[in-house]
Image 1: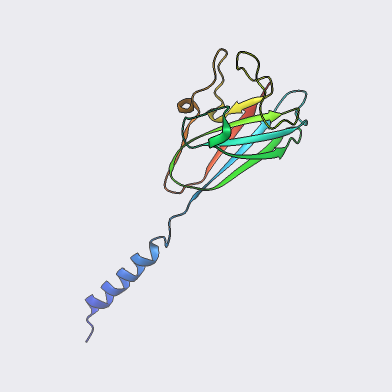
Image 2 (image 1 turned 45 degrees about the horizontal axis):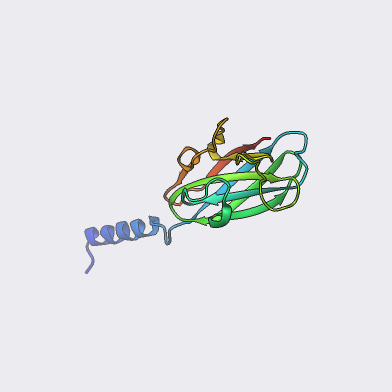
Length: 149
């Protein structure tokens, strides 16, 4: 025979079980990229998501990269199924269609670029740690990145 206590306990256990997520949610990153300058509608905008410092920001061989047509002001880059971790985003505008952000003899970009946290130095490239952000608990992340000449 069920007692009032065991019935209440059964209801509490059922309620607690239903409140737990069935599976962990992988996060999504949505980066709103603002392209400025006279050639804002020219070429393509590439977003490269780095999960480690290696190669950041210009060597995208180890990054998840996607390209979008430059639309004269704004592009949205969306990365899904991100596990918890530390990431940094590098964005470049490919004006001449060669698939990379061109650089001069000193390694400085000659095409518009930007990184997460909008870090920009005069004499050196931003470091991964300066541009990094965390994805934790499956929470989605939104970023605003400026791409400038």
